[in-house]
Image (cartoon, rainbow, N blue to C red; front, top):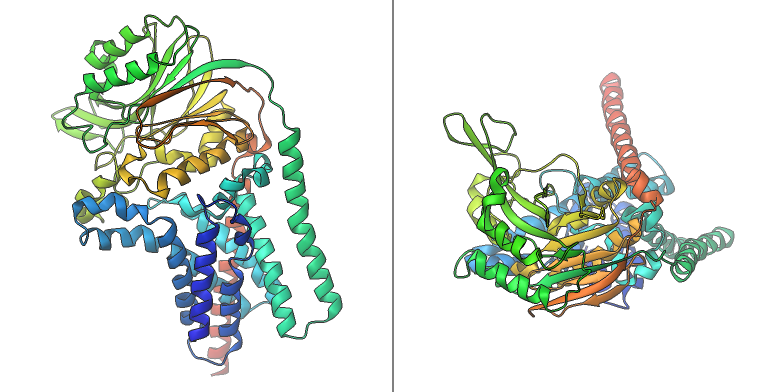
Amino acid sequence: MKKNILLSIFSGLLLWVAWPPTHYTTILLFIGFVPMLVALENIIKSDVKSKGKKIFHIAFLGFFVWNVLCIYWVYNALKIIGPFTAIPITLIPYSLGPVLMATACWLYYRLRLKANRTISLIGLVCFWIGYEYLHQSWDLNFPWMTLGNGLATTHKWAQWYEYTGVYGGTIWIWAINILVFLIYIGLRESQAKTIRLKLIVSLVLVFILPLSFSLYTYYQYQEVPNPSNIVVAQPNIDPYEKYGTTTSAEQIKILTHVSDSVAQKNTEYFIWPETAITQDMDEDRIRTENSYLQVKRFLEKYKNGNVLTGGETHKFYPKRATFTASQVEQDLFVDSFSAAINIENSDKVQFYHKSRLVPGAESLPFGNALSFIKPVFEHLGGATGAYGMQSEPSVLYSQSGIGATPVICYESLWGEWVAKSVKQGSQFIAIITNDGWWGNTSGKDQHLDYAKLRAIENRRWVCQSANTGISAFINGRGDIVQQSKWWVRTALKQDINLNNSLTFYTEHGDYLPKTGSALAVLGMLFLLFKNLNGRRMRNIKA
């Protein structure tokens, strides 16, 4: 048992060392699960009791080590409420992913009781993909640790994401781990040389072919020249002071100053970060709001200029028009939004409402069931309670017709959500975020690395504006062309190439996880049927 514990922890450590933002260690992802698989195999082959329980516990341990070491910064964001009070709260995101990962391993064990090892390992990949898709789809969504994200620091290896999205990376990483495991376990089981040779050849091909295709695609890819001048601003305002000592007017003054410092007369987009405008503005009366008028005055000297900015907005209704609307008085309801606002020289104003919300900070999962932790989660960013949202992504258009995909902070983890907007006519992706809540941790670096994958999936430039950093420009190959330093007040400008073509992934979205999840459900139904049928047969014999 002790050996299996050490193997599980070793797996967790390998996966952590391989994970972004660490460079040059990505190769360890392709063997990171092998010690875990060996530990599971040891338990399956042993004569101990309660094998399923032991497999779950061993798997949970390794995955807990991996997750905690990669997303430790969640604690950093919460410790303002007290270093000890934050510990039980951070255990939720630290533990939830590992629980789902361990469940996939437990299902693999159950399948091993009914099928051979090869079929069961295929089932394991499907169960894993099912967990990943669930973890980006339910109320407690947190797809930060989706396995395909692990290739973000070696984006040259992931150019085929334009066909598969990150889930193609999940399958690739698991396939190589499984082949290495089968070769190792074959040595232990005196495997036939012909079978071992086939496994070695398969391993080489499964690794080399996707890698070669990716590198070829990377070096052959050329953008069609279609320049547009973009400015991203980084005001560097302490997130804990944004709603306190510094007024909205003062913050906009900072933004206009840094934007002016690098802008050109032909600049078409000024991109400001999430909640750059802290004044809570009424969307139906925004043209009379002081913050809006201040931005309009800034744009007067830029004929074709647009400001795409984050802001807090609200909208009133005479009845409960949405699920998230709150009643403020008789026949009056209100929705609050974390919004992206497109302001131009004309009177036209466009809104996009953040729709992939941070559980606890911006939405309360499962209604009132978790209301007791609502006050604590506000320290992750945003306001507590339920923000309003929109059911589909949208595109914000400039005066000249340039389409931008607005992505607010956490939303950049959802490949299909971004792709749906691109498919509607977007020509570049604008990520606006406020990563200052996490401090100078690897959270901000991981967030930037993941943005490279959105660029590859859609072959679109990504322009990221972060309140305290890191702001950046990323081209269609996933290269970071420019980036700012952390906690510096600055602005960057770049002539990006607008793109109108659509990739396979942009057009078809998350077809891989949907297929994998369907197969996982079929696998669970198969196990349920076999279990019920076994009980029925035992009752007949009795």
